[in-house]
Structures are given as C-alpha cells and as structure tokens.
Image (cartoon, rainbow, N blue to C red; front, side, top):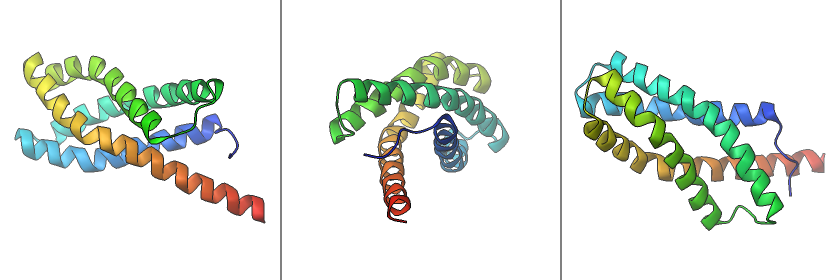
Length: 144
C-alpha cells in the first residue's frame, strides 16, 4: 500500500480533475445548450471551483473512512465514491446553473443530469487511473 496522500497532492489531484473536466465540458455544453462559450465557461468555472473544494474535502474523508473500515479501493467502493461525490455537487450546482444561464430549475436539473451522466464514469476513471499512476510511481521510488 502506498503512503497516504498529502494535502498538496490532494489539491493537485483535484485541480487536475477539474481542469481536464472543464476542457472537455465547456465547449460541449456551450454547443449543446446554444449558449455563448463565455457564459458556459463562467458557469463551468464556478461549479469547478465549488467542486474543487468539495473534491479535496470529500476525498480526504472518504479515504479515511475506507482506512478505518479496512476497505480497499474496489470497483464497488469507487462506484459509491462517484455517486456520493457527484450527488453532493448536484445540490449546489442546480441553483447556480439556473441563475447564471437564466433557465428554470427544471432545465438546470436536466442539464445537470446530463453533466452527471458524463461525470460518473469520468470520476470513476480519473481517480482509478490516478491511483494506478500513483502506485506505479511509488513503486519506482521505493525501488530506487
């Protein structure tokens, strides 16, 4: 098992997660919603900043809970991780989307559900690949 992640590493992991997500989502959502790229970029950035803070806090608590319960990062714990993480964001992001894009809460919820359908597999894959890369790097460091 690799050493526990530092706060600095958690922040770097979260920033990487959000930057990559913004690069994928902003142009796609602007096109799908027929909104200016700048408007969609602003709402995406706002949600990304909220998600960034949530990411650091949530992952820290989630990892501690896994350790306390002696659970590993199995496929099922990763599914639970993705569902809980994204569910927390829905509660905050829907009103923000509705306000910024001047759409109804229902329209914002539908947009957020669409985004959630992207983010569930994205969250799962990003954190899984990050952990694989981190584990490989830790093994290389220990071998040298």
